[in-house]
Structure formats: C-alpha cells, structure tokens
Image 1 (cartoon, rainbow, N blue to C red):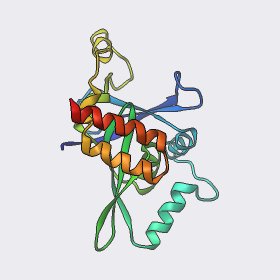
Image 2: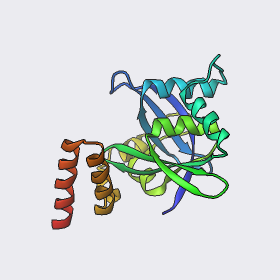
Image 3: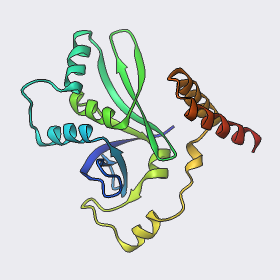
Image 4: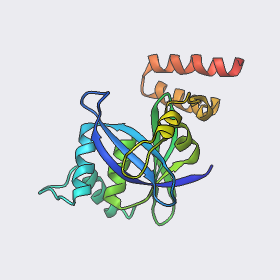
Length: 195
C-alpha cells in the first residue's frame, strides 16, 4: 500500500461539531491539492497548537511524559501511519522501534499527531485514505469552483472496508466489551460476505 507523507496545514474550531477542532493535513512534498481534514478532541488541539507555536509548559503534558518514559526504555517512535478510514473514523498506528524490534500500536489520530510532534517523527497516510477522504483546496485554504464541485462528489467509503479489517475491529470491540458496536460490525461482515 502506497504511503504519502503529510504535514500540518492548519487547525481550527469545528463549525459542525461543537467542542471539537479540525486538523488539516496536506502532502509534505509535491503539489498535491488534496488536504485531509480530521476532527480531533480539544485537548489534542490545544497540545498541537502549543507545539506549533513553540510554547513550553512548566511541567510535561501527557504526550511529553509518554515520550520521556519511552526514551528511558530506548524506544523511539519512528512514524505515524493513518492506515484506514471507516465510516468517517480514521485509524492510526504508532510504529515504534527499539534496539531489537519494530512494533505497532493502534491509536487515535489526534493522539498520534500529538506524539508525532513530541517525537519529531514523520506522519504518513495511505494513498487510499487520502483519495477517499481528502478534499481539494489550495495551500492558502481557498477552494475554487471546480474544486468545490469535486469535493461534493459522492465518495465511495467502502473501498477501505475489508472483511479482514472488520473482523479485527470486531475482535477488539468484544475485548473492550463494546457489544453494540460488535453486533453492528458482525452485521456488516455478514453483508459483505453475502454480497
């Protein structure tokens, strides 16, 4: 699966979801006009804004504390990978490395970006996620008439949905005792298998 390196383009208050913020990511290299808007929690937005402005706190915040702990165990965050989007929810992985191994941990996108800023590591996204959820806009945030038409086209969110991914999510939902979500996932798996 092809990966695209992203950078933070902007951060603003969400007009559609009260109490949330929109983080906009864009391609680091090239002239790609696709931007990836992601809804994040206020705490993550505050941390990201502080890092973007170069502000420091008197005591370490949670993401900085996490970095200090992993530093003491010689574990380094190599990259963030936004691997999937399912029904508007983005899924991210933290890819860590120690002297011996490389391993992944699932994470919310907001936390992943905060940790990427703490570790100063790159943020990657699958090309498929960017194509499914990206919107076209210029670097300055303006949207032309043709870009606006493209942004409002019908999107096919089913491309990133596989039975294998849904089964993994079902397993996690059962482990976390989220039985309502598990039943919805089970129903979706059955739909895909019978299609």
